[in-house]
Length: 345
Image (cartoon, rainbow, N blue to C red; front, top):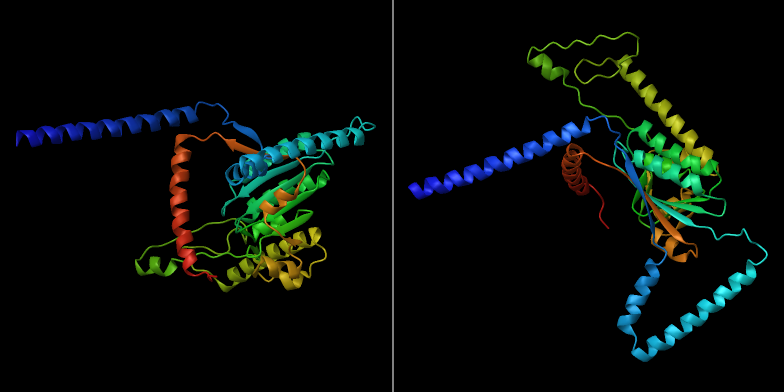
């Protein structure tokens, strides 16, 4: 009995110590976040030009004999020497000539498009150095979300277009609704055969608990100044007039969305594609929503330009990291539920 109590007491002491330690870390993190220092981030640049050559070299090491490797190495050296000579002759009268670079930015976002904060920094950094012979590839993965958030994301990409830097957007998985609002800004849109594209529409949905409140004798009051300060509400009774006004606002937003897409892709038959439907890549190509069926990997492999990947990341507090972890768990759960209703191929 005494041995049990001793072990239990030791376990309890360890548990309390662990809880106190975690609490202390959270308190310190909270204090640090309020210290008034700017939560600055960092920009990283990764040269991924040699990635494919590295793959090739690794496979050759495994697949070729020693004699074959020696012969290949000799041939590669001769080809590299010939190319250097050709480049020297080609540019001897063009002292300021420079080969263009291909910059790569990844944008993967949820409903709130919180990643637009990083995107705006990446675009700003790009525009400080980009020149006409450079190019930008943006790999977009998003099913859309809040209008104002994705409107800002599209506006960030438009900065590149206004600077006349050629821009291609790749859709490997999905660029729907707000995601397509971003994609249509590009000079060229490519998509994988079964990538989801389109969904040029607007949706708003919310529950109404007025009957539940009334059943439990709970009064709900809402006071506004302005006839349409609030139309549809979750807790009060909604009138037909309020619903009509809310529908009018949705239609107006949809109209702006269609105008935006038409501005960048004027060849589209907008009435045909702005029905809220989504299409797979091949169908999107036939409708003119994309320009080619191609994955981002193929696009990168075919370029002869140096490839530089830009990534900006904000420094996150402990509280934000914990919150992001919880958000990821919830998002994965929602995705699992959504998959149950999707068509499988």
